[in-house]
Image (cartoon, rainbow, N blue to C red; front, side, top):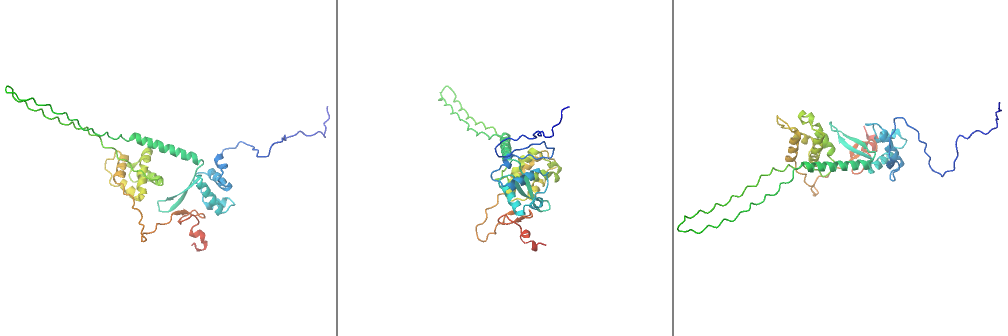
Length: 317
């Protein structure tokens, strides 16, 4: 039997190589519960490290999780001001969108939308808009051709009367053939100037079924009627006024609800609001709505910042 040598060198467990400085990645298999983040975000040139980390954290959260500044400040050691600045960076670069919605009881709430690839989202929406415009062009009837004026033939010369023959009567002039009547063109649905009111307009159309079950619209009808409803909202009409116009006085037999709604949206379209009076006595326009960097509450102010309760916490009830 061979003797074991206790002073024999131990085999090397790791091979040491001379490589250049830099990162070396060790990739392991991960169980379910991971988030896919694109390099366009993690290697973004304009975003700060805090903004990139917050974007990855928000994308890893489940649908409906709170992502307001106060919740994120409790989760991370950074303060509210730094987190608010990072969220504004994500908004400026398209990775985050905070929209304000009015609930049924009249309260204003902030809805946060996170985009994992803003460029791909914009390209998809552009393709959908182009396809929708192509479908509208295919459905709209072609304009009627202008009716041509009938060509009158010159009357035939009347032969001179001869004593042995009776005078022949002159031929009656030919009546012009009436041009075939073309069907009237379909009414053109109004289009809004911007897409700012598309989301509340689509929600209004989808909720018409609660007023009358016969107003249950398909997805295609809602997409076709959303721009004219947005044009009403853009012209200053309230959502309640639009709903009342579309649901009041419906006929007893309603076979095509989408066609009836389109007719009312075209025929009863209100005029645009007049331009604001430039005189000194004209009422000042209210300041725009801002999102508070401290409590995420909507308030009116000329520039972003904090609301009155966050600026003066002692005065709050």
